[in-house]
Amino acid sequence: MLRDFKPAVDRKALIFLAGIVWSIAGIILCSYAVSWLSLSGKGLSFGLAGLLISLIVYHFGFSDIVKKNIDRISLMGEKVCIFAFQPWKSYIVVVSMMGMGILLRQLPIPKHYLSIIYIGMGLAMIFSSIQYYRVFLKVSVEGG
Image (cartoon, rainbow, N blue to C red; front, top):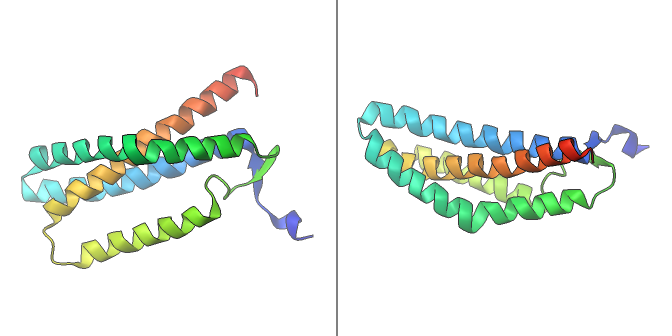
């Protein structure tokens, strides 16, 4: 009876949804950073530093997480809970990271310095979302 209320989608849609969620989160973080940098006049150097951090975070962290999520989703049944694009324990990490972001914005740290972290994390999330879109398109073309 409780399963009747579970919001479920097929695996292909779940992979696409995961890409959308990662993209939106990345865009939000980058939009904070861009607004801060536009006010500071330090956009280029701080933006490039954020880009460098994003490549490191993507390569050594997020790309592996996304691959594990895609592999896990691929092994699931045909209909999957819409929230299963990441394991449940990862939601604790997400809430913690959001809390840290809120805390950082409240601290007296100059925003142009924070922009480096926000661009780093935001772009890394956007780069990671591309992995989801690639798998979604591959599965769509193959018809699986």
